[in-house]
Length: 252
Image 1: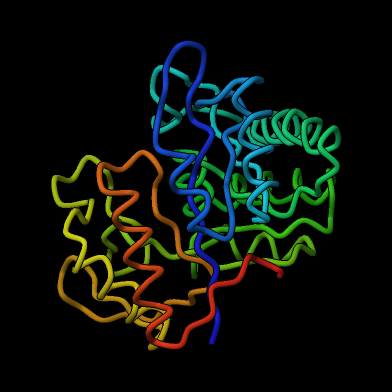
Image 2: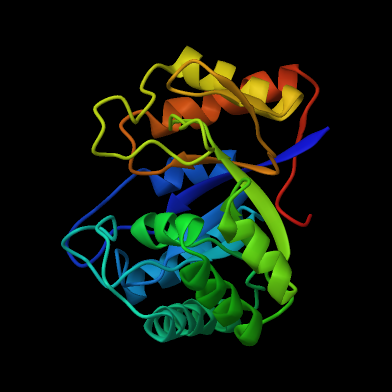
């Protein structure tokens, strides 16, 4: 049994530091790097790719909505064509830095509200997936397990990796509980670890309503901006290893 451990990183910009990338990157197998719209900037993208390369982990683009003030977590009324364009633009930006460091872009994972919009809206999901396919059809597409993000990516011909979350609670339909809900985030390390182990070993998760639902787990996400990110990543990695589960990058 094997699983990928990913984290959203490269989210500092300008004079603003953010997250603990230097400490987290050695513990994960894939990094989703912000592409400058919801967070990150050209310098941070460059430095994060160098750090990821030095640690031999998978490099992924993390395109979001053009909403720096809202950290890409607020819905925007974009047409599918506009969604397509913002995704292609950001993939091109990050891939430029990959080229100068002679590394391959491995995967793409939409960020925040764009991710949630795609999980619920077929046209948006298709626009994101088509943008990724047209940019580079060999890229692995990471999306929320059992949602339109995965089915639309597969429909356009992309290889997919179904993502589950260590630090988020689930609705009965498999969607993530909205961050507007006070109970959306899991802050207890032991609870997060137990959720991860069940998702990986049993392909099940307990929803916020205490129901058990099926879930496909190819890659586990821990948010790099979370207050307990480093603790979550280190302890989840330790427990998975003890359970005999191999931690390997997406597609690796």
